[in-house]
Length: 349
Image (cartoon, rainbow, N blue to C red; front, side):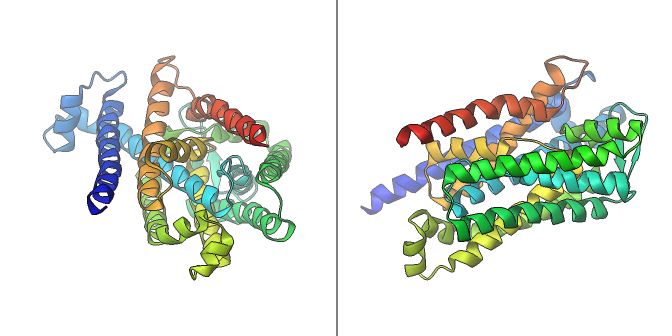
């Protein structure tokens, strides 16, 4: 029995280790990919402090912030989706499908257009420059929390089904999308184009300042989720069972959704809307590694990072020199899985 359990846990740890190694290799490859003629060997030597000045300038000032932003955004969105699916007991839950990303985007657009937190640039690579990231993040978080509270109130007091919860998320996404449209309607023409461009989702706009903020938020959030891993395992067996085991279900649910909304707000305010990573990453890992959150949470973190790095590399290379919005690539990847899960849910009925 002991040997069987040791083998069971060793297999999961090996999968997580392989994911970590694959993500690391993909990160180095993503840094080397582009028009600068960098090789993976040159990237590694530069990161170790032995590269030439030209390579250092490209890697440290342009490529590395983008790749780190992809790692952090993928990890944050994926772990947020993992926790949302657990606390709401809804396999289709994620920041994007529940309308939380759209709510955060509305708050960020409101701060950029009406509160003077952003200004328009002439650069194609970055149409909007965030000159007050704290104001944008605060506004995005406030509106993301409004959407989160609506979802929680519907789940608690109306007892809606998982399918109806997704429909509520679609309604919220439509509502906040309309709000963003109204904000754009009263903005100058150039600023409208800038905000539309900003909502596409792009890792290239992240600087070291944004990377530092995202690192703090995502790292602390993952640490919190790992501390609550046993509570999430108890919730998997149902609310009554969790209550019987001494879990404060309401506090765990509210805390999980609060932290997940914070992650979403920060990432959307800096990078725009990047959809479906929070849906695809946890589902892939749940099928491979199982539902034990001791392993599912770190596996989801790594899977989200890997998926977003792959998506961004495709966005930069598939139509080079044109760089596509990474949000479009993740939507192509996530939409079929979303439809499959939705169809499978209705077939079970």
